[in-house]
Each structure stands twice: as structure tokens, then as C-alpha cells.
Image (cartoon, rainbow, N blue to C red; front, side, top):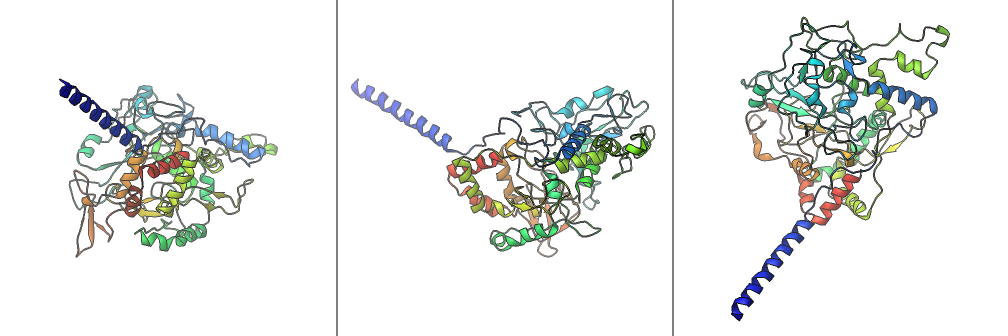
Length: 498
């Protein structure tokens, strides 16, 4: 009897120890703290702007939030469609404040379902919500990789295919434009996704000289080489200068960036992109460009013409206002440092993350008050890097190849909800792991030096000439994985403080 009691007691002790060890081990594992709570750390104007510049920002901000309908008869804005992904800039760029990235239900600031779900049938539209758009997922756009995914020699597509059309809307009578066949293209492995990039602080990025970016990249060349990290800039085919906006740094300026987005995401033809997309018979309701400078509709008093900020904004096109909003926004404000985030920052530098995510750049002289020679912290070198098969999207844009992306700026990351170009995860630890660039999906030809980036269903075609296969971040991620769990946690805490 006594032996039985001792055995029971021993079993209980062993069980307790096992539970304790399991709980301790679990507690030691690094975990993404999640999006930072509290007030948005971004969304206002650059703090040194004078009163007139602040007023101009506010006027531009109002235009940024404008909602578009087809001809301005339902919502105030004009030009929606024939295809579109959103009906307002602020619909997609809203986390943690207007100008940010995709909204979502996990937001501590403004938890809302993906607005693209309700948009499908707004104002009588007859769209079906694609499978990759969900209430708890990110705002997305869809691109097709190849023109014909069944043909390995098919030319690349690469363009955005609007989620929705204006068919059925009460302000688009007679339009019978069908949605793209997303289900069939997904089955063929021919669809990739992108989420909105934040607009905060872009005036500083735009005003950073090419020479500064080149010098910054050159200064880390030896250290990058030791870790197998390359780096090159995308550039304009016209003047050869560095392009820096968009997931692949494909756009030259903020104005080009917002002009393209207005045309592609909302379907509004404008002075930067003046041609209507999907201009099929029966679906075009406005003269082009739909967004233009209001030269004939400004202040009728010629003596006061253009002398007030309100009139300046009113006379300017939507895209110019959007660009002014982005140029005059302040960069995101990080949280107050703690011992953990200070440790994380030091580790971030020591393992090699900062070799691509540059913590400091300096602007040139600026015409806006207090924005000259500003030292800012974007945590990006704005260069292109090979990210390997697990992140490759098969899209070529300028000099950026199928697996190359601009280093994503990390400022503001603390309040971001979705990560990577396609919003595949909300877990920062998983986003870091995905930087390894799984080489199991790469096959290289020794003779032709061709590599294929594979998905589960297909090949990103056509074959791409390159000697590179894998992610430039691979060795940095090995360094991260070699850290103690507490050190990894410090890095996660640091990133969520940005």
C-alpha cells in the first residue's frame, strides 16, 4: 500500500515537472507582440511646416479621403471604373491612420473588416468576391504572371487585373463588363497578390539624392558580400535616375506613384495616366482624363486667382493633391525605447539586418519649411534584392526580376497588420522566416544558367536568365535563428517599436 502511494506521488511530481518545463519552454519561445496599441504614430503633417503648408496638407488630405463613383452622382468623386479595386485612396491606405497600409480586424486603432468585401456589391454592383479577398484578410490587388499559363513560352503579363467592374451599378447603366476569371487563373497558379504600401514620410524619400542612396549602398558593400548580400537599384529608362516607389521600386516619383494607383486601383484616368483601362463599349461614361486640373473651374476673380491655399488645392487635380499629401506627411513616430528594444536594435545591426534595412538617410534641400537636410530612419536602402523562391512573384518591373523586391521600409511596422508584398501573414516571426528564400523550389541549369521559380502548380514563365537562386537574406536569417530566444524576442520587440 505504501509503495503504491509513493508511486502515485512520484508520478504526480514527474507530471508537475513536465508541465512546468513545458510551460517554461513555451514562455521562452519568441513571439510577435502584435500591432502596437495606442494612438496612431503617423498620419499628420511634417511638424516644421508653416501655417500655409499645414493648410495645404489639410486640403490635400480631404481630397485623399474622397470617395469616387462613376460620374460623381452618388459619391462625390468622379471616374470609378470600368474596373477597380477600391473607391477611395483612404479605403486601402488606412492603418493605423489614413495614408498607412491595409486595414483589418486585428487593428488596435480601428478594427474593421476588409472593405473590399462590401465594395463588391456597393451601389448595385453585381461582382462576386474573389476567394483571396476575405473579411479578416488584407486589402489586395491581383496580378497575372503569364498571358497564357498553359504555355511555357507564353509572354509575361505582370499587370493588375481589377477585382471588380462597374457592371450593375446604378450609375453605370448598360455596362456589361465581366470580372476576370480569377478561379481559373488561381487553379493555374497564375495569380499573385500585393497589398498597399504606406505613404507616410514619402516626401523625405523622394527628396533623398541618388548619390546619397548610392553612397549608402557602397558603404556596406564589403559587409554585405561576406553575407552573400547583393543589391542594385531600379532606374528610369528615360534619364537613368533611381526609382524608389512601389514593391519593386518601379516608380520614379510620388506623383507617378499616385497617378498610376489612381488609374489602376480606382480606374480613374488622370493627367499622369490619361488612358482609361478596360474602356469597352457601354462602360465609359466620362471624357478623359477624368481627373484634371480645374483651370476653368477655379476662383472666377482673376485678381485673386491662385492666391489662397484653398484655391490652389481646388484648382489642382486629385493626383496632385494626393502627391502633396504624401510629400507632406510626417514619418511614423516610434515608441519610447525600452531596454529590450535597445537590445533588439543592437542585435538587428549585429546580425546583418541593417545592411539592407538602412537605419539612416539624409534628404537634400527642400522648398518646404524644415524639410531640408533631414536625417530620417526609413530602415531601407531602397535597393533591389533577390529574395528567392518562397517570396518570388514572377513579375518583372523595370530592372527588378521575378524574385527581386525593394527593401521594404520598416518605419511604422509596429502598427502594421499584414506583412510581405502579398500580405500572407500577420505574424512578424513568420515574415522573418519567409526571408530564407526556400531553395528547394529552385532548379538551375548548368549550361543555360536558367532558373525556374516554382509554385505548387506551375512555373513562373518564361524562363529567366540569371545565375542567382535563393535569398540574399539567407545568412542573416541563419544569424537570427542562432540567437537565444530572449534575443530573438528583443528584435521582435524592437521592430514592433518602430
